[in-house]
Length: 389
Image (cartoon, rainbow, N blue to C red; front, side, top):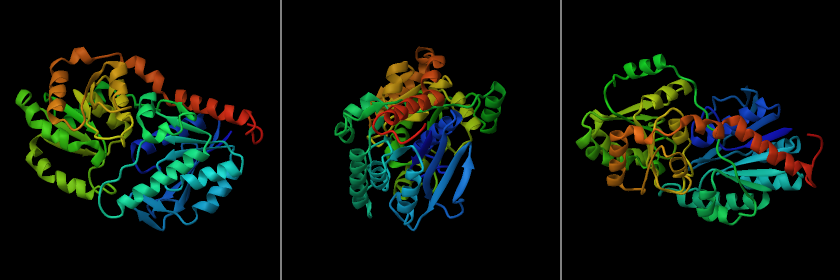
């Protein structure tokens, strides 16, 4: 089967969406399918075409940006060629170009599946209000034209105003999650390198972005330090020059300076380092504030490595904790509740130990790719069939 995957950003860009798509594309390729990723050349230094882990990546030149989106003048022509030469199309929202690609899928008779990763809510200011309207309109047109809509959880689908319009098309498929095996020695070296032995560690893996609720962890920190005065937060992920988040970073600066002795930015980490990071943490947190967070892949990574989680009680986001028992959920934007939950988990670690070995198989990339494969084959097997698979 020839699978065309379309999204705005792909590797080396790092976000939950790009990690999801990379894992899915690699897993589909490993199952014997021909996978092409059509994406943006968001940096001119990136090659227009390359092979990555058995996946062909095609990048379209970018003329200019609109907030976090990009405008690619040649995407229409190339999308027509690529849709025509593939059996199925896998779209990943949000993206400006989704509607045009979905229309090509309909006109050319190629089954088109839309994976809805999250709602769109760009920060205030500049052209973002107009960009919000444009992306939401493109998403709605794409969802109307596609044949299936994939949601991470039924919880999120039931509470998303966007997904509720297309419930007859919605199919729930969990996200693909994997962690690199990491030895005790590698974990010990990671701890030693960051000079954190003997200190309670609160981990947060994210971009420094508005929807992540970083300020609420910063506000909770004095309360946590009242019980655990040696505690320290490790923040893994991009924290400098995050696209569209300069104003947010500036607003956080006073709080970050005030807690500099208990806050460490580790920057983006390689997969083995991420595994060592989660193994080294006593608890990880996901204090997201709105529906632009639909799940939080990092929660599953943390749990797979035995580290409990404190997460916001939001649709989809709360599911990993509720289904595993490995942590606590708290109301979003509530620093006091966040602090109390972190203190509870740090004080009673065995209570939230859970069964990490039961989590991994459900989210294994091959397991998720098999579910996509079954969905694709069903669409191809009926009146939408476009040739041999």
